[in-house]
Image 1 (spheres, one colour):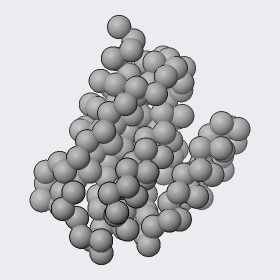
Image 2: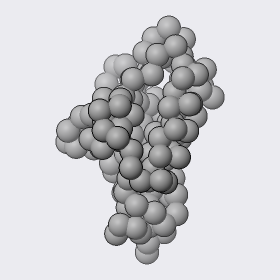
Image 3: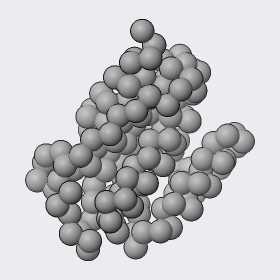
Image 4: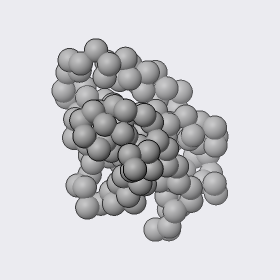
Length: 140
């Protein structure tokens, strides 16, 4: 990726589940800062809920960003629940989500800056498409 260490890397994430629970996938899109895509990640993550898939998308995105040497992240998600739980606006009541929440926060602390923003679904179509494709890859 061509992002300099001091630049803020913009990443879009999404998780999808066909059924709830059901076959699930994640989509992660690293943007190049010029309106294009620098890198994409799409992965089937097993039979799980949509909310677990959303958290897994965040974990995979943050792990990939660290592997690429990025230091400042702006993560965009269409999951209001995920964004508000990570920022502390909503409590995490589910035990599985609590584990993933704590893991994500731990991983996010490794960066100089790592923020998460809720965006409307129509502004997250690339990550949504990747997550849906990954979920469908095992549902057929």
